[in-house]
Structure formats: structure tokens, C-alpha cells
Length: 308
Image (tube, rainbow, N blue to C red; front, side):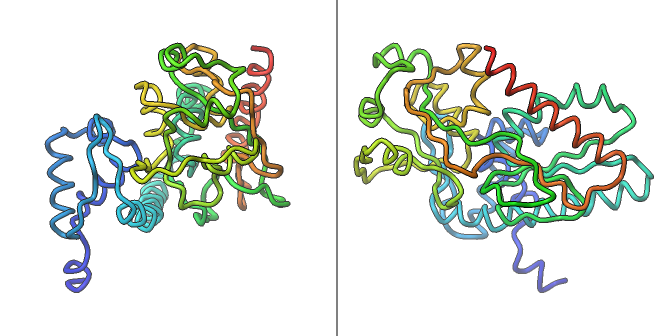
């Protein structure tokens, strides 16, 4: 144990780092951790002192991590999630609670799942719903429902929630200023300030791939800023910093409410890609009730989007 303690950073620093990378700002991380901004900033400084490299670069309110920090995040995030899940399961076994674990992709959780939690609790007041966030493509567990994104390979345990549909989105102010609308061409989009997400995960479309579907090329830039998660990307869009790729199943309610604007006539849909629920070996009544609820919620969301 002493050997482990000498090699591992302080656990509070790791938890603060994970939250800031996932949420994009110290303010959001402090709110989630029920802490203060100075306390979270101090945890980050402690981690930098332990690991040596600079972990973040400040750009306005956002804190995009450099490539080394992004790789570190992707290494530790599944481990932290596994530790949290194991701890929750142990607590549940001790208390006898009716626990249902949901491990969700961060973007899907933030823009779709978490807003539904109050309704889910109201429908199933006897259940304890434990939501863990993970963007890892390799996260596997037999004790959780997994909400993830990727190739929808044939599987008896996977159920498609949303097929992939990707357009370009901006704030209303940015669209007005630059004369953009849903009828804007891909060529017009390519000339704008494009907001990029870290593209080390090959499951996701990036700007280069998206533009190539319309035979457009991404202009080479040496000073690109890669944001570590989709929540940070959309935060930057809402601040009017530029245009981002928008997965319509997550962005439609923001578009319908006027908070975002679709600024491309092009919508890219790769065959066999989308968001899915992997039920694993789910068999108990509680898990099956939640699975049916999520399937119905996705179908209702799609129907409302089509009618809206």
C-alpha cells in the first residue's frame, strides 16, 4: 500500500481534474463537487506539482487541456468510474436498496438523460438510480446499463436509441452576424471559426471527416484548440465563439428553443453509427423497467422532434 501511495496523486486532485476536463470549467466542476472554485483550482495545482506538466490552458472561461492531459484523462476516467460503481454496489448490497446503475456517455447524459431524472424518479420512487459518466469506448460491466455511442454492431444486448445525424450549429447571435442559416452551404461553414473537440477517439466525426462528405477540405491551422468533451464544445458555441458539429438527437431541443441554430443544409449520417443502450445481462425487474422507460423516452423524443 505504501508503494501505491508513493506513486498515486492525491485522490481529491484526481476527482477535481476529472470533473474540470469533463465539464470544461472550474466553476462547473466546483458546483458539481459542492466545493469552491479556489479549492478546485488548488487541487489542480497540487496535481500539476505531482505530475509536472501543465494540465490546462485558460481561454476565456474554458480550460482546454493539452494533448498529454487529455490522454491522462482517458486513462484514469474509466478507473475512477469503476471504483465509484464498485463502491456504490457495496453500499447498495449493505443497505438492500433497489439500485439500478446507469453508465452514460457524458454528452448523452448532459443533454438527454439527466434532464429526465426527475421524471424517472417520480415514476419509480422505489428505485435508487445511480448515474456514472464515462466516455470510454472500452467500458464494460455486467452490473450496469450502458448508454454509449459507436458502431451499432449486431448484438442481442444493444438497442439503438438515436441513429447518427450530424449538422453544424452556432449561437443565434453568431448566425445573424455571419449571415448563416439552415440553408448555408458546407463551403460557407468551412470558412467560419470552427470549434474542435479532441479527436483521438475514432468513433466520432470530426470537422475534417464531416467536410469531406461534401468534398470540402479543412483549412490547416497551427493554433487549433481541442476541447476535451462535448459539453465544453457546446458551451463555447453558446458563448458565440464559432460553429461546432451538432449531433441532432442531442441538439434538437436547443435548436427548437432558439438557444442554438442549425447553420448547414448538410446533415451527415454514417450508416450503423449512433447512440445505444447496452443492457448487458440485465434481467431483474428494476433494470427491465428502466430499460423500457429509456427506450420509450427515446422514441417519444424522436417523434416530438419530427413533429416540431
